[in-house]
Image 1 (cartoon, rainbow, N blue to C red):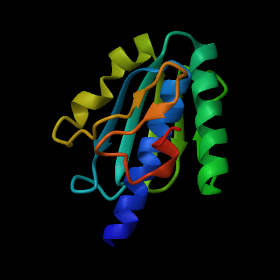
Image 2: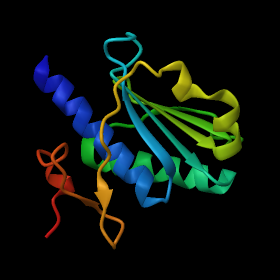
Image 3: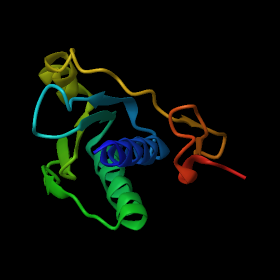
Length: 141
């Protein structure tokens, strides 16, 4: 069970990194495994426009498909103001900034611990941190 949770956390960090590569703002990883049976992690991120929200979703889907050989169930891609990517163990909520403020989803899950995010280097690639050092994708040459 522990290795499954470690795998889920590594995947959550990869998803956050893929969102950050497309300049997503206010990216949060919430550990909800003790609060709900829906998922182990929620990831919440924002984009300034519908076009950016869609680009973030596309980048996450592409990166995670390549790295983990899985594709999400996707909702909301038609309007791109709130796109949901469901990976089973991880649910990603991508909002246009004003829509995120309106719904305040992270306030509903304020009891959930937050997982530290990877930092990006000058090329937009995640750099090693104490949380992500086990994931080789975060190691840069």
